[in-house]
Length: 266
Image (cartoon, rainbow, N blue to C red; front, side):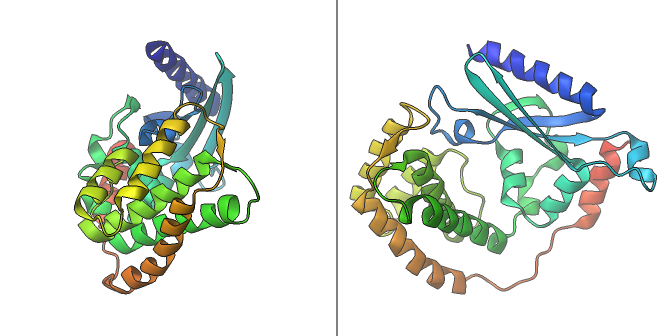
């Protein structure tokens, strides 16, 4: 089935290129299937970077959208395509945008090459990563769990937990967290039991198994995880104070070199 899905995705990408008059540089998976907690009926979240015809970058009044999206439903699956223009993608890399970094680190590459963008470490800014993941956790917790009565979507718990664990990992190891969620859990629990204790890990792994049974599984709230999440928001304030207040230093020369290479201007 997987090979068939890959062929479908390749076909969709070809269609998008023709329909939008673009060239796709690379396309990856960036969702639950890349994070390792997908179910059989999970959507395919395909993310890609594209370039437009050179004239679009050189002529005034010919600016096109920097973001493209398309949704396709086929063979009982949903294929969600989102693409960023190369200029937008490089600009976000200059800001150490975690989403763009994850596109470069996704374990599932559907099309193209990411060699020009490596090593990824050149674009990592710890403060930006920490606050992005922390914000991801807080937003999802307050909107989809804390204020909800009764059962909640299990999927939302993992958005919260992934944000918390990734933020902690950034501070603890000064690097981009693993894409695989369970790998992050195992690393942090083995080396930081005071932060991620045995009871919390056990609850996470029970919920992981349930999540893999279906995309829209609903569950009662977990007191163990509620306490872990609430404790995180107190710890976050302390950790945030410890981040070095240095200015971001991403080389625009390096990014411009990549842009010129992709647009064949060098």
